[in-house]
Image (tube, rainbow over all chains, first blue to last red):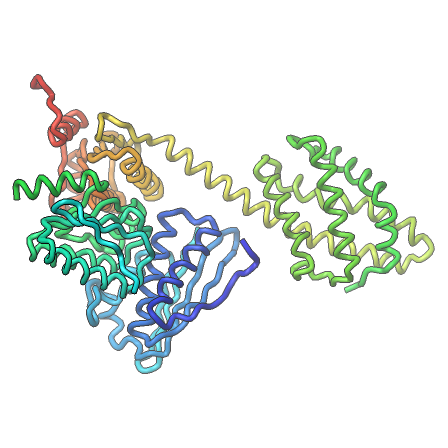
Amino acid sequence: MNGEHSGSLPVRIEQDVVLARQLARKLASDCGMRLVDLTKLVTAVSELARNTVVYGGGGDMDWQVLEEAGRTGVRLLFRDEGPGIADLKLALTDGWTSGNGLGLGLTGARRLVDEFELDTVPGEGTRVTITRWI
Amino acid sequence: MERIPILRMGEFLLVTIQVDMHDKLAMRLQDDLTDRISATSARGVLLDISALDMVDSFIGRMIADIASLSRLMDAQVMVVGMQPAVAITLVELGLTLPGVSTALDVERGMQRLSQHVRHP
Amino acid sequence: MAALHGSTLEAIKHNQAQLLAQWVEALEANGANRNLKEQTLMQETRDFLQLLVDVLQAGSGNDVTGSDWDETRRFLEKLSASRAQLGHDSHQTVYFIFALKGPIFSLLQTHFSDDPARLAEQLWMLSELLDTLGMHTIRTYQKTREAVIKRQQEELLELSTPVVKLWDGVLALPLIGTLDSQRSQTVMESLLQRIVDTGSEIAIIDITGVPTVDTLVAQHLLKTVTAIRLMGADCIISGVRPQIAQTIVHLGLDLGTLTTKANLADALKLALKRLGVNLGEQA
């Protein structure tokens, strides 16, 4: 693994969602994450990256490889300056749908990671941070 | 334009997904498949996802839609080769793909489709 | 921070053979060459000293996190990883670096015998440098050790709950003892993988030997069945006792088409019937 421990990737167009997935896969794989955990992380990344493009009007994915107190992990922050999520409680309810999707994929993504944080201000933007430890 | 190839195998169609699909490509597959089913009057579709190492809610939705659309056109869709890690993740996501038949591999998928066609 | 005096570097360079000899002697006395091939320690000490000399020669600062020190850090990372895997403890591993202090300090004492202030300054600088490199070595060592232990635990887990092939196309997973969440996850994952590897269409999960099943494990069991079906195989649960049945019902989990049998033998009979295998006589 090279010395890079953090970075950022623009998530503006559809193809970026694929790039985001591939980057997440590489980061998790380099850390030695098990296949099932890695798959869950990459899937969560796919959901959140898509949200950023489709609902957030495009944004960025900041990534970090964490090493704290003997454990290693991958943390990703999806941020956009889009319309934000008006009704947060509703959005985090299973099965809630906006547009054509099966939901914003938020609740699903939350189940796939170890840590999940969501900050949103209607009219200003959204920030979702997820973390998966080895 | 990038497309996922659809092969004809007798009265069935075979689709092998081997690339990391972006959303548009997935939608294009859906359109192409429904066109081909109609054009060939295929009775079954084998969707080989053994090379897919990730299925998210979008792709899951696409698979479920393909199954529904195909059924309306009297064709059964059989999804084959789902990887264990993908299956576990889909279950965790809460996506159980109701109405979608599955088989371990193409061979078994074909057997089941044939049975289904003979005894619907 | 003190800077390396030009003559210190010269002294080190001109006395490499002696330094190396004393360094290796100290290491061997400490048992650092346990399980190592004879020449390995010689080669490693030679390489490290060369790296050290090169970096110091280039006039790089003492910030070992900087890019000038990349190669040196990588060397130490490789070293500590190999020691961790060989089963050396952390003390022995970091001693690789600390054992160099003695020889270097003796050398400097001779070299700066008439300049105590300079001697103190150089000793301090080198000591700090070697300490920092030592810390880095320990950190890497710990990480590798943890990874090795984790892997061993996982392998043990897999060994203790084997998936057995009962028939062509039928796998059985006899679960024994109390299941904790972590173990049940690992075990289920290996079942799924065996299904793919063997192309088995039916998996029987036998819980006869499981005294109690808590909510988490019951949910996990049902998730496993769902995953197996998504993959194109099916699952039969055998050995479901009344208490466990109650837990599942109380959970309100959708049993749907979950197939259960009282014992493994019945489950196998059902599995074979589904696969169209003619059993001949009736039990």
